[in-house]
Length: 141
Image 1 (cartoon, rainbow, N blue to C red):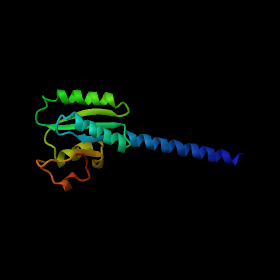
Image 2 (image 1 turned 45 degrees about the vertical axis):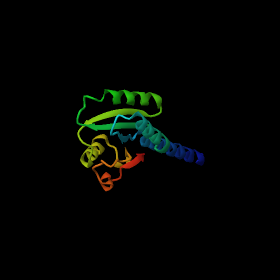
Image 3 (image 1 turned 45 degrees about the horizontal axis):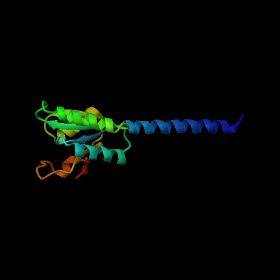
Image 4 (image 1 turned 30 degrees about the vertical axis):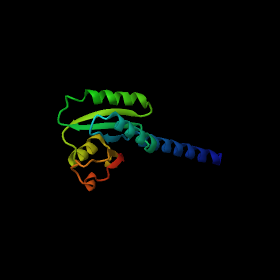
């Protein structure tokens, strides 16, 4: 019996477990809440995720009371998805107002931790306090 054979098998098994774990990390989607149909801001969010996160999935979430006027945003997200082939970028239109309840619901429904969610820099009309974001990140200016 070769004692090194067991070590090689253990290393191979460990390597497979590490690779599987890395794939699982890349499979966790990230969410960017887009307040407006702004191609420049959405592009900045994708660039941030591409540079700083280990994911291959990004969901752009737009909260609105009027889901009929989202065609332009849908086209913009399709364009961005084509421009960044290493990240699967999709759009989710949510009928309702952005707030802590909606964030919590999306976290549970989509299986995305709140610290994997982003918003752009809040403006003076932003109704929530920063503490209410509960770990959500602010990524663009």
